[in-house]
Image (cartoon, rainbow, N blue to C red; front, top):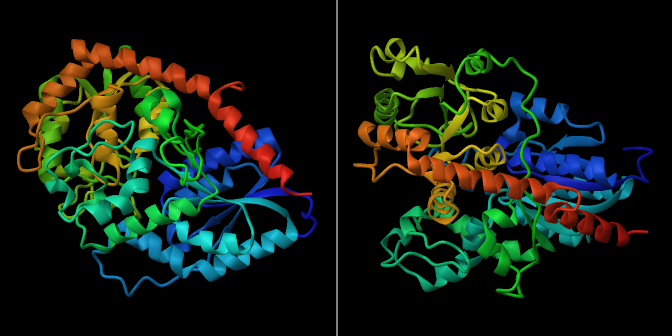
Length: 469
């Protein structure tokens, strides 16, 4: 970084996973284009992938990246949860993080260090070096509120949360059943739970918490989040930050297929880059789509009967996902459905006039993308905070429908067909569609030059600049 000593710079450490990198990339682009601040991404060797490289390479030249040296995780059991792997990788990377931050301090005017939700132990290093430290929370205020309250909840509760007699009522939030809480909170004896409690304590070490959400989608929580506990860091809403465009790769034939479909007639079906269905659930979904008689575009991935996030670190598969579908399904639905193996250009699909609904895993990036394109959802959560997101979307802001109770953990084809028809052609579908359009307008306002999210980012960057000479 020779000759860069005058550059005002922010360092950003995302957790592994494209879902964490994408919104931070959008924040980086805002800092570069609107505030003349250079950015250095610090990435984990464990997250290195073709998709990550393509994403980083496509960013403006004033956004650079440095990769941490790999750390060994071979001592971890094969069934170690994602949250534990991320947290331990961070802990073992602290010496390397310290060296990178110290070098950036010496070669640039480093004004801030922004870390992702599983990298909070790096606050030890940034505080030691006197660097203002921020937590970037990739999801919403609902799940953030839970994690901030988790140390207290852990101390006051002995049973598993699914056995709580009443729904949990977080301040300003829709009530949520214990069984719908974050995926890593399901088993209090698991290390992933202990790590979440740990991070809940460390969130308080941040100078501020930046959240990828906006007031209109969580109005009551937004109203009280900074009033409830003055011991918490200030919380700033800076969303909705969604990917501005898909990577420049071949778009297959799905967009040309959509061009031939009537307006708002197609249900887009995708479970994100990491989500996986079981074999049985995949077959029920196929039968449900066929029974509904609705047009659909389905991003099909090979199923897994072991983990619902089996594709989180590796979204490639040697199996042909179509081979797992019911016999004759492809032929019977060829006039109304399109199957796309593994990946589709989601932003272009959601923006297309033919797309009228999104059957989604409720990952927060996908949720914001759907809202910002005015597309109502069917909530089908799989892991992480997705069950909480589903509760908020269906019972809170009411921009999604949800299949009825799953027998033996599996949604049956009849229920799937029912909810698909309700969204695409029923009165319920019209109501959630209108609500979604209203939220789309609210999100658009937040990002305008005089919008609340835009103002917050400007105020923060101005304050950080004033701390250096």
